[in-house]
Length: 516
Image 1 (cartoon, helix red, strand yellow):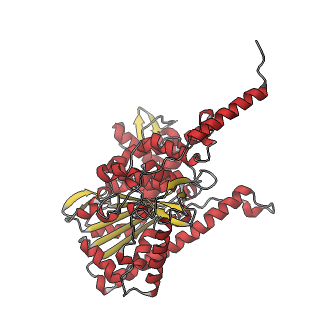
Image 2 (tube, helix red, strand yellow):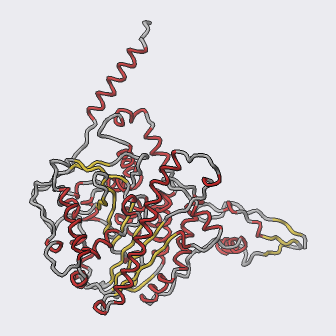
Image 3 (cartoon, one colour):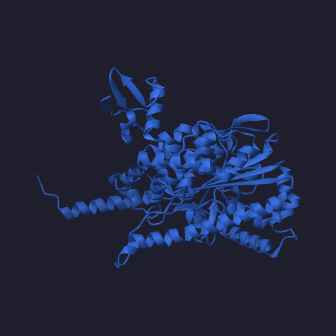
């Protein structure tokens, strides 16, 4: 058998890869010839605008933070799912009354799924995402020999692999047209960052109008992948730009209002200039998107921009047009605080520590500023006599607001990744319940709805004895932590923590026999 030279084999392999690379090209999204403000996935025409009997607008926001953010947000949804309220004459769960969900980075995964599935998110999201090692699958695909030809292409990257995994686990081939027509949940705003201009980019038709692109044809998984594309971990997500071919003009209300203050005028000017950049497809034929947390980790910038863009009278008028009398904003912030020994050594910080500081420090500072600004806006709104018939409620659920405890120490040290052990996931779910329990703003909100707090809420981890009691009650074995059998007492507090599976069912129970 003749020997086949190694160099020849390598050459053939290289040629095959280069040939395959030429076949992997970016597939553009369909363009539009004219802008129709009554069509497309846009808030102005979403179905929630037609619920005349409902005078309450509820906005739920999930911050960035990988699976940590998704698990914390899921815990909040669990509590909202259990909480019954009466709105618009209908008694339903508070979860079913959410009108808008905003998601950034890791929070966008949950936000998009909630928009698609509605209350079915509980427990589907837990089973399909939180209970899976999503990160391992992404890494596996990134290093798979079968993907080398695609990854070698200049128009295909790790961000595209991330999209594929989101399709496999959660979204399938769902597009924004499917979300517009068949969504079971609220209107979703998924935020990414346009790395070319360093600005926030929302996946709503309002942002695609100046690009002359039909958002309806874009897959939901691609939007989530763009929002979650952490720099240097995942490659940016590419969108084509057809701007300048559909007679786009900025909304008139952003230009014609003469009563606006100087700050509002400047904000609107910047907004218009930003959108005009998307209208220039000659200089920007492609848009590259990365993690939305870099420009708005809390998802609050859209609301803040609205308050600055519109004068108070116009904003009030727009709200009254939709017969809204009560606006509720619930912000879920999964910002962590990982313990570090960095300052205990004179050693120069490594590359990973430096990158983490570069990314996280401005995000954290910007997030705190956004919270302060929005809280000030809400307080001023409710004090303004002109807004007496429109009330604003703001609920901030921040991991850092947990009281000192082992639970707080655990959840604040959970890193940002796309996989968490079941224990971490369950701790975050418990943390969500605890935050809602202690939140005065949330309790006041329930009082406004004349609703009693959910009696079945699971808060911070109960004592071992209490946990055993709960298990034994379900099994109808005993009524308390001490049981007698003949002359022997069995003390059940020796129950060990890993005796429960992730669904809370008993796997095993260790029992110590104590002589009477």
